[in-house]
Length: 114
Image 1 (cartoon, rainbow, N blue to C red):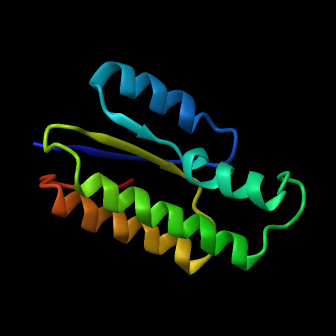
Image 2: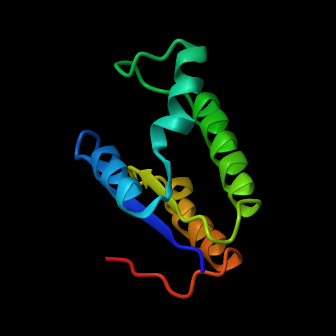
């Protein structure tokens, strides 16, 4: 049975550090939010200081979608760890639902949120 872990926290809170440790313990693939955001930010010349435009965020969301789709093609025994910082924006919170749907499609039995 597949497992999907979702680590949420503020920037710099240790999501990637915890994800690396969890990955080492479980063999799960770590799909840190930097994996989807950093290549887009780098290509767009975003340093992290200036505001990020809606167009650049849309590109990040497109990369996230590609990663979620690729996850559907993984062997059923491979677990996944996703990390994210949830803002107050609706599209960020929709990511929670997308990951719930992904977990269901991967055959994960239950979701613990808290």
